[in-house]
Structures are given as C-alpha cells and as structure tokens.
Length: 318
Image 1 (tube, rainbow, N blue to C red):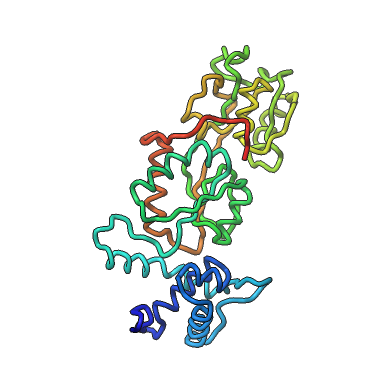
Image 2: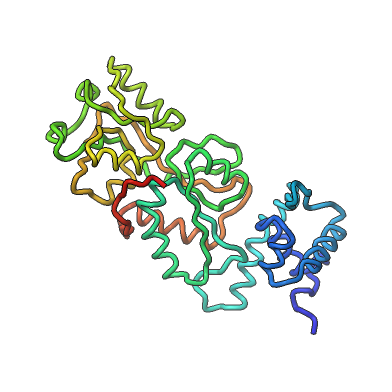
C-alpha cells in the first residue's frame, strides 16, 4: 500500500520529501533522520536525492560526516512550519495547540533556566502534553549564536544581543539591585549607592558579561574601585555566594526577585543601571504556534501572573 505522504503536492514535491528535509535539517545525518521518521537510511537518501533533482540544486553539504543545510534548504525548512501545523490541525481538529513536526527547542542561561523556567515548562507540558520540548542551558553570549544558527527556536537571555541573525524582543526591564546578606549592616539601608560599597567585599561578574561594563562605568565615575574578592560567571553562583556571606553584588533582579530568599536582601541601587531580559528568535523564521504559546506563558510568569515554581538555590552553578 502506498504511503499517503508519498503522494505529490501541486509542485511535484511529496510530503515525505519535505519531512525528510526537515528531519535532516534538525538531526544532521541520514541515520538520525531515519530514526526520527521511522524509515530506513536508504529511504532517507532516496527521498533527498529526489527532492534535490526536482529542485535542480543541492540542499546539503557534507562536512565531517554531517549534512549541513544550504541557505536554500534552511529557507524551505523555515516555510514548512505553517504547512505541518495545518496538517496537524486537519488530523486532530480538537487539538488546542497545533503540534510541530519537530521539538520546540528552548535555551537560557543558568539563572533563568534554574530559577524561572521550571514552572513555565511544567505548566506548558501540562497544557500541551503532545508538544516535545528540548531545554538547553548555556551562557547568554553563546546562546545568541545558537539562535542565529537556528540550533534553538527561542533563547531567553540577559546579555544584550547584537547579531543580524536574531530578532530581539524585550521580555522584562528593571534596574540593577544590590544583593546583600540579610545580616549585613548594609541590609538596613533603603537603597545602596557606590559610596556604600567602599571597602566592602564585592562579587563582580566576569568581564565578558554585558552588564559588567555598565557597573564599572557607574562605580568608577563615583571614584570607587570596589574590593573585588571574586569574579563569577553566573548569577546563580553569585547569589549563593552572597547568601554564604562572601560579599555583596550588583545583579539583575529578574528572576531572583520572584522568589524571595530568607537570607538574601535585595536593595535598589542608585544611580540606576538599566537591565533587560530578552526573547531571542531566529531572524529568518516566523514563530510557530507552539512557540508563540510558550512565549505567552513566559510573559505571564515574568509579570507574576502565574509565578513559576523553582527549587531553592544551591551552591552549584551548573
């Protein structure tokens, strides 16, 4: 019996060939694509060859044992979201969320991933149990290139994006705060200024962080050179070290302020240092129905409408 997906579309391209293209873009090898679609490796290669013949151009280049999609293959793949979502609605009209033909890939740095995303991800999977999620945790600057290269569908970062391959949308804006152990003398102050930090052990972010330059500018303009005891790569570790009494730190209050800590006090810092958290999506693609639904749940959680559950901070930064 002939598989309906082998029937021709109006353009002469079959649905099976389009599924193979998408699986190869996602997985990178014919073996992995075959596993993804439940087909044999020869069937994958045959479908790809037929599609390239119909379009009269190669769609993948071989590099180190992997199939790297050409610009045309990525363009076609980006246009398939609407097609596969429509097919999903036809097959299951009662489904409230059109299921994508591939997993939804989300990425975030450790603080956002560990302190904010658990509740959002749990709520999303309960509401849309058929949608598979892949959550990656990495540093914000690396995630910008992940999005540009379409290795993830959405990144939520607190590193200022500057890349032609990504679209940035502000998720949350706030002023930097000073994180202080609650038994520290500075915790009694209603706000913290650079002068208050003179001689106080200070935990700084590493210089690759976009916020580090803004902090240094304000502190140095006040003639203050904090007594840095540590430079730390992640806010998760920074906050834990503050709680342990190692020093104080200037941090983005999102998402830390959503979950008050009994041993941690957050005080406004003046002069203000603006902080933003962004949604990053690939510039060349349109968000799928599934991605838009996930982003809406993130917005609601960031606004405190559905506070996400998160485990307490630990001493681990990974």
